[in-house]
Length: 464
Image (cartoon, rainbow, N blue to C red; front, side, top):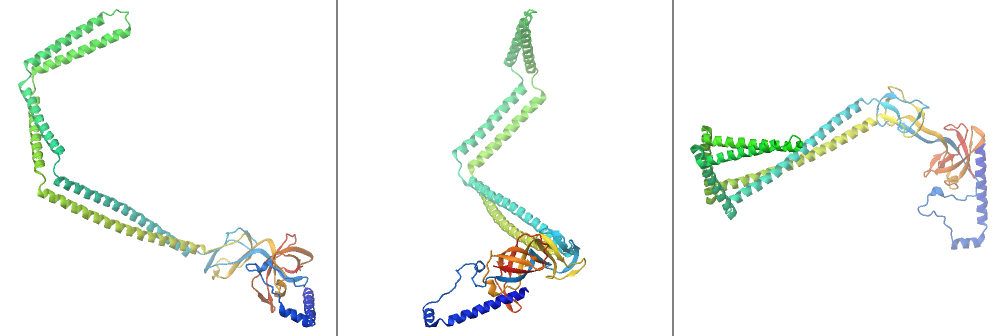
């Protein structure tokens, strides 16, 4: 019936077109003259979306047949061949975006990933080793450069004339060594000869003075009454104790002087003289060498030291270059290993078929153990929370009269007494052939409805 109505509409357009031709042919010379002097061109502004434009054709209505489709859908296939190891969903299941649907046997991919990861770990370890070697080489270069500085300073000291301060220092060291010898000799003489009469008498006088101090402190303490403050009695006792200690020290000094030096003390004094003389001789030798200046062999040795230090710097710089090359190679190895891991991870990811959108598993053609080839559709996921209409036979004559945003009325064959409002949301940019006609697919968003719509139901679309 609807195709019959469509035929009547087309017939009316043809009849109207014939009448227009007849009218145009009777316009006469005036119309021909006007046509020759002016013409009208319909153009589309540059950059304007053709889907936003519609022409007035005078047809009154544009109609087309269509079918119900989900708001979004995706037909899914593996990119690689393999054997299905897991079927994780069933037809009718609601899934989230990214949810796994099917999984292939991934034994080979897992092994390849583990091998790639092991190679990456080794490559990173090689890089760490190379970096540590570079640090060690840099330390070696710094040490070698310090060696040059030290050798140059040593040579400069050998070849430079002594300053007045250096000469004065050497002379003072020599004088000190001579004074030490004299002091050691005096100590030895005192140890061998014993104390003099004057020293003994002075020590005896110190003992007598200490005894008098003890008697005075004891008298002061004894004169304190029993009711004197405790602090005074404590102070008096402390003074007495100090006087007694001084008396004991003075007596010990007197006893030591009277007894004379022991054999061990005499031996130590003699040894001290010998050591002092040896130090004096060494100081004299250093002083003489200092005044004589550096010998030729010393200068030659210092120059050899500089050459060796310079060679050490060259060797250290070469080691650094080698370490830097090793780091570059190690970095390349890490990059290659990382790329291999990424490739292995991508290959492993291809063994899992996931949902590209949230929706319902509308079709599933897969079984456990099935061998699949790449590109063969195995599942379809659709968002059936909203429905759309996709026209099937809107011709080029009708498409020019509609535009995105136009309201439409949709009748579903399964519900002949119901009309669902909708809006055109997209018009195909390219044409298709349908029963010999050039047609353009138009997408229409339907308003929410309680009708139990199903994918593929046929519809009739009317655009006023």
